[in-house]
Image (cartoon, rainbow, N blue to C red; front, side):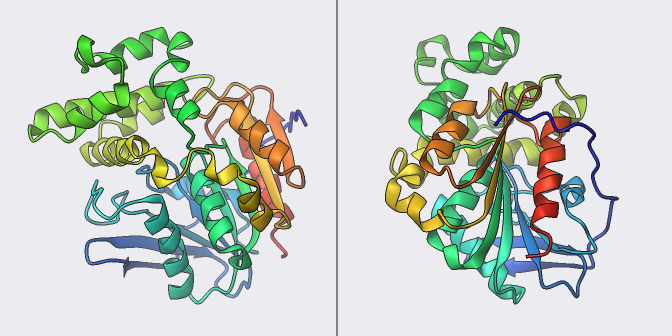
Length: 323
């Protein structure tokens, strides 16, 4: 379905009524927060992108605070979680179990799971592992972490659409190492020379911030000025991607995996001109899982903050607010 949803309305800014830290391993401690209605029996968990992107206050605004208990948390190494930018003991499957740890810690039986970009990857992996804990899925900018997707964004594909930003992105990489950008960046990002690593982190993060919307957002580009953000975003993303997401290529689309979530109510929202997570991934998910409601927004790229995408995400959250 191609959808033009019209006027965008999000909810007013709210503050969390509870924040805390949850130790999930000998290494990692996660920041979490809860906002919205403390008396509500309907909880929603927001799974942020990256991996390594962290949450922000604006992530609360998709959800009706009178109807939802709204849970945000920063994944391992991200945002306010500690240690910052750590890739040790940090995989898709440790994060899946962290989602469960947060749920149990907060005493929630089951919840709506909301994720975009890498958050959609994690949401699908979590739902396939713990389907009984998922009331509904709201997925945006589908990323299935296949080799073809990584190749399109980080090696050749988006480069043809953003040649100016691409030139800046590959500048830190020696010319004789550009046949494998992910591998070359891994060496730079994990260099013992802090200046080299940070320069690479800023270039890596700027590439994604420059390509995530139809119209580049200065607010997105300004995020890269934070050393902690750039470092966490680049190092953790690269760590996951050189390891191919710690899963088989196409694992999330396998029939036995889709069958585990087939009966879960779901909405998929995809920008037509998304060059970070191209629409083919959402289409492949739709073909494998036709039971899920599916929308392509005709005038949007990747970001959840593009008006057409935002409107459909809010509509989906409202649809599941009384589950």
